[in-house]
Amino acid sequence: MKVIIIAGGLGTRISEETEDKPKPMVLINGQPILWHLMNIFSLQGFNDFIISTGYKSDVIEKWVSKNKILDSNFEKMNIRTLNTGLHTQTGGRISEVMKVLPKERVIATYGDGLANVSIKKLLDFHACHGKLATVTAVRPPARFGYMKIEGNTVTHFGEKNQADEGWINGGFFVLEPEVSDYVKSLDEPFESGALVRLVDDSNLMAYHHEGFWQPMDTLREKRELEKAAVAKNPPWLSL
Image 1 (cartoon, rainbow, N blue to C red):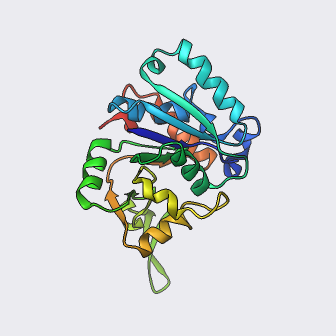
Image 2: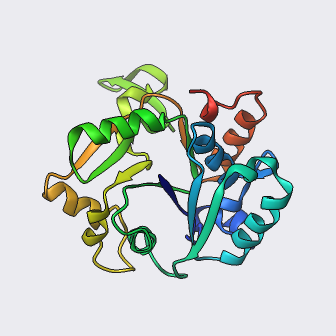
């Protein structure tokens, strides 16, 4: 099964790192986050990747070409890149790749987040419900100090429980070929376009992931991932 990695955005929220490279090429412990992401799939036996590029696509293309020769992990991977345009949004990037994979079920994910999602369990869940799309639902990291207030008196101060944050889109989609028809233009975000239409048609199901999940939207989150990456078995590889 093909794995689509969305890797073409500008990465404006972490612009300190993305002036000369796309966000998925930001280094985590000496390797691009894209490399760590691909290893999540490879560890579970999924080695067929199509990287949807855009902003500074040549950086990713050169990295893939170089590492096919130098990195033993790449030897078992089939990696292609597809330039889907500088200003194309996430929906357009996914649909452009799906057009070259007609009639194929695919996995799709963002190129800037890591999680120890069981791909087999995700696929089994998708196969059981019979709908067109599955999104992985995750708990967002608790970011702010939580206060419990009675009247004007603070009765508790500390980290908010992650379980209190509800569920959000964690990426790691499974998509049937018909999903590409739900994308109406290249400049349409997947999240506010196709996913909304899939919901309206009762064709989107959520796979709940309770394990590790961490995006890289800020320098703080990059540093958190760097600390985790030095472990012998980083949390995104601990299944």
